[in-house]
Length: 301
Image (cartoon, rainbow, N blue to C red):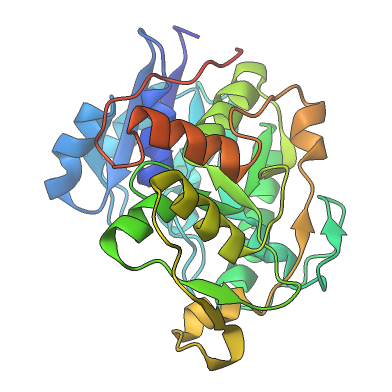
């Protein structure tokens, strides 16, 4: 993949994980709103550029040699900010082979705890998920117009170094909220990276749920992490009595089990198929704290 050049709009937590899993000789450029984050992106192997909703000459030049475009920017009420600023430039990219758009399993809304796959009806509940559905359609439409494959990655709850139940227990913010029957899927950031590299290696388009094998009650994850740390888990709190922000409460209004069969059928094998395997490794090697050194995941090109 040494001839490929990647550009990541919104090189945040997932984008940096993608870059850390890179191999020598691959060019990765990525954007951030804050120049203060340039150094952090550079440490992850990303050549940083600033994008605050406007297409700059520097970004325009970078897009001319980009072969693989990854978009990880949340939509806004006015629409997808990347398409709003750069649709014409993207449509005219001479070297472009493949586009990936990072979305969310939130587009499915509530399915009463039932299983959903990529063929399931999207029933977005929150405004942010309604906007995600619209953004997905716009990217798929663009791909059809310019004859390029578009991969939509619908991600579940993202965790990894610096963002996990071990960190929450260590800093005293972990809670065990219990809502009977409630489950969530999760995805380790390294598997987001792995799925992106896998799909990019084949220029595969389509819609893929990138999520773990095991939808599980959130309180079970906290209890498991506490067991690894050798500490007492926080007491269980009934969901009805919990004080939550409107956004946090909205997450509990959607209950579903998300299938990852399609990405597996495409040939991807998860590094962390469930939360236990991920927490076990992060605890064992100390990578649960953000910034700790860790080996890049193995991936197939």
